[in-house]
Figure 1: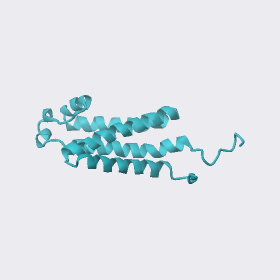
Figure 2: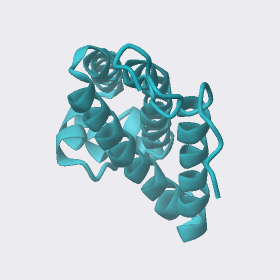
Figure 3: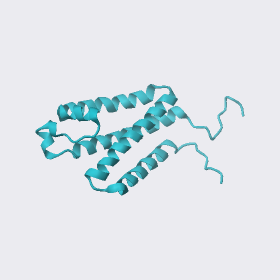
Figure 4: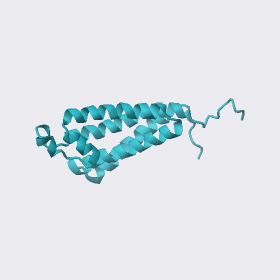
Length: 146
C-alpha cells in the first residue's frame, strides 16, 4: 500500500471528531436539561435549595439559574471548541471523557430522580452508544469480515 493512498479501513479521525462532537454536545445538553428539570420547586425562588451532586456545579447553581445557564452555555461552547481544535488524540480523548461523564450525570437523574432505575441508565446508554456508532462510523467503512 502506498503512503499517499489510505486503506479503506482507515478512518478520517478529524472528520470523526467533527461528527462526534455533536453527539457529545447532545449528551451534555441532556445532562444539563435533566439537572434543571430535576430541581425542587423551591430552587427557582431560593437557589440555595439546589439539588446537584457535582460540588462545583452545585455552587454555580446556588448562585441562581441565570448564572448557571450562562456557565452552562460557556461550558458547552468551550467543550465543542476544545475538542475541535486540540490535536486529534487529545480532542478525541476529551470528547469521550465528556460523553462518559455527562452520560453518567444524565443517567443518574434518570435512575434516581425520575425513578427509571437501572433500566433507564441502560436504555440511555444504548441510545448514546447507537448515536456514537451511527454518527461516527457511517461513511466509508467496509463491513467487517466474519
